[in-house]
Image (tube, rainbow, N blue to C red):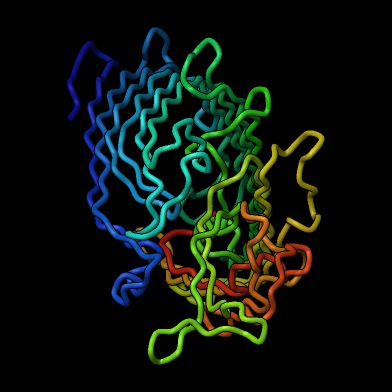
Length: 403
């Protein structure tokens, strides 16, 4: 609702809410009753207040309070956060948003009825199944947006950068610095801008003070329709394993090999995030008709356990930096393109880091859920195919461009 005030001033109060039901890892897995599946209602309610021309013409005051309940692959959570700050817009394309943020969450590392993630993996101090996390931090976000269209950009560029400082003088449980730059460029040729080149580079680093533990809430994940498309949603990440399953005969007895050891059938993992991120994407989009577009793309991505800079930093274009090629189809609508992308990861690099050194990687990843095999007992990430244990192919259906 808008409340008129003095001439040239307008206070705005906005209420937003979302309610849904989440299925992890998919609706089909929940219908089948897979042991690693889970489902639950989720919601997010936000109240936002904005005061334009706060003290100065180009400055707006903004404050918001959010309550939410959510479900992730490694944990579920409920809590809320407060955000307050001022937005300085000296130019229509440029803005600076310094803000204070307080986030309070209760996390539960329950993956399914029988599986849970140890609290220490989530960045919790408690050794019990639940933990409370309080993050208090100052954030400054910069944005320089010269795109011709934010929904379907054809020309222009976008430069974004955010920096967070948590803990220290702001208290909270976690003392850290988090940086996240985001660069995008678009150029089209042809009388009707039929052919568009789009390029993205995004990087991030999270540096906990004194080499301490980071909260899973602040860590980086990649994979999915708007990230590295060679992986499914948030599956480009350091992993923690669940309990393995073994092959059984028709009577439910576990099968064993010649040495008397049980024969592994599957060993699933869940993503727990990392302290570094690096993503690149190059995409060519061609407009076939007024409402149909095709695209080809190259994506690369890295999410490491350590910060992006430092002694143990992951190596860019090294064995933990993954690459994928793909193609897609877009149907253009008034709310943005409806997008279908198919990506195939290149077998360049090693397996994803898994927290259990005894984890056995699959010998073959297959594609789209077919062809995954555990016929060789290898615990070496170096010997595994690139991005193991994830499959080599991914399909993404979404609304809106990838970037």
